[in-house]
Image (spheres, rainbow, N blue to C red):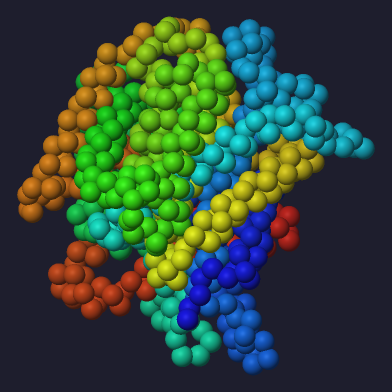
Length: 640
């Protein structure tokens, strides 16, 4: 029997989850190379998984005396899932954000920005690091002979970590509840899970079937060689670099139309439903036309909505929020029969939840009591109790929406049009919020702003990956949660050591300079310039809500309707401006293959497209190792 949840799989998974943190942070902080854990398909985890499956496990299988030590395909997938979940919190999801953000008010306060007057008095002291000397050395590096001041970090982290663990536990509860609905009833494709599953399909001999396919190696070679050309050009400027991006100005040079080839996006979108893929690029171009028309006509909102999502475009941020509320609201109605089963399980009636990592009873009450804990915590952090509730509702609406898009749309890198804290400020107006509430909302940027990774998405994909495992999946919860917890602890210790050794401002500039200041600059602005409830924002949310409802209705009732609603949800997001062309190219190729070659040809070419992201991620991993050895800095193989 192909076992998944064994002791050795757990131990190896924990060790590799720790390795993920080291690979990622040494890549972005020390060699300033490629981001290895920034997306829902983490390059570092795939690289490590490739090395283990293709080299280590294959070699062990070939040596007769130790053949029994080779891992089964199920064990390998369990290990990958642990690395996947660990990757979602080691960098942008949490690990790279928290330390700089909870120390930024102390380090970046100055007479010019008046943070000591406007912000610091309204931040609960147990949530930040106030020791100026410890914070200075964190950002600038310790003098020789001094030791790391661990004690100043203990109090704030001992307050933050329980909240974060409860938040992520609630995410796992939601993922467990949604699994049957999405996997068995709606049969979502989960494109980002296909590559690791294909990599472990066993064949005659020691080598998995996937690695015997010539089309896979062609795709692999194309991406690997083009990525290598980028690296060689960095080392030797005379070496020609193949450019994969081109932009042209449009709408009187008020916008740029970007044509970018992204191998990961092309590889995964190949498995997406044609209507979904069409809608993803169509809505981005539609919003591009709308934005350009607005620019020429002088239509714009002056509201400050921060830097995330639609990059300050308030109209589209609010439009997206309304659409996401409709999406989740309709989904709850669509899931009503399944949620009835969950409720029956929660109150002790007999239901079939044997295939879940948590029983329905545990998941339901975990959400209830976990949410209650988070509401109390947020209220203690400075929010009014009703703001705490509203913030969590908006945040989970956004997380669930993005998870759905990841699982159905196969986009490895995306964000929402807006974030929860900004929506609350817009709805109420900063004039009607206390400074304590505004600063508590600013601190939510630690885990709810740069939403390119989070455990709800990685956990949901993990449940799909192990769908063919042994019936008792309860141990898998501990596999995932402990991998997440240990990675968080590893990341925090590693980040403190690197920052105090080299100086945080010499590591990744965004995480130590730009990102940590963003929430406080926003908070200072809306305190100095109080705002009232934005009526245009309410109107835009209403338009987004109604438009999304129309799109859902048309999708559900007209077979000929070509537009899928998830395209509307993320159409105006800045990342889609970079990805639309790759999606369009693959959509066109797939459409032609299915029309003229049929399903058989489509299935053959899937190996080529899976080879594209694997080749690029492997290239990034190989050059990270080379850069680490040579000491070269700034050699980034890929961004998206």
